[in-house]
Length: 340
Image (tube, rainbow, N blue to C red; front, side, top):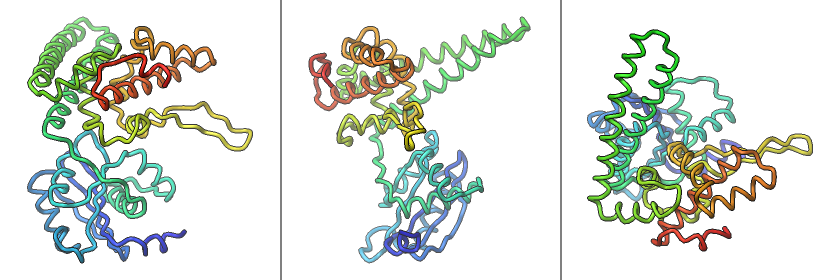
């Protein structure tokens, strides 16, 4: 089916938004394949300009049954997209937030060579029109707050690791002393934020209930539990444990062609990298101390699987267990997971 046939089947305006820290590049694709572009601030005032612009070119976005409607598509960009996505959602716009790897693959299919913000916005509009990605579900206020805290904590830890690497490479005593002082400050800030997260969870009845369930899983501590809850949100929106694994990018990706090409199976990584990162070390612990994960990993090792492939599979198994515990509302019971 060619692009012209596909376009004739769409009856909505596709809005691609390339998100930057300070600005939004907009590309509005009409059902007739006409493209209009604009740039606005990534702020409350910019969102109002965006909405006025949409109403001008696409007609009333909500409340008019005869209106073709607008579908907006944004890439996940480290949280910079969330305010714009939430604003559009509240205005009645159908919003999709997609993984950048998906649109990168789409750009490759279209042989797009230009890499500019306006070009990316136009690509997102065409991706939205052709693929019709699923609607984004905004987090609750509690989830949003917890996500801000856990992502802030991860940023501090990443900065600590970078500073530690610099310190280890430093050869000048003055530089070493300065970096040691920075590390002390970062450690204090990390400790403060960890305590703040624990207090926030303890003061929210639902978050506390879910955290109490998760920490019954060997390998999952309170901080990992907070990240899992912050990044997953409401687990009932996932149809299965496999869907949760796909959301985290923990499903295996196979590469083969005919009889000659057989590449090693890898994780797809088309998902939430923060969730994957949060599960890496807990999976290593679970491979030693969680009987379900330990047995599962042992079977894979006995079959000759590579160590890192087994770690990735153990991360997936651990996430499956988290999903089951949260979905069923019951503490970890090895007998319910040992055969899965």
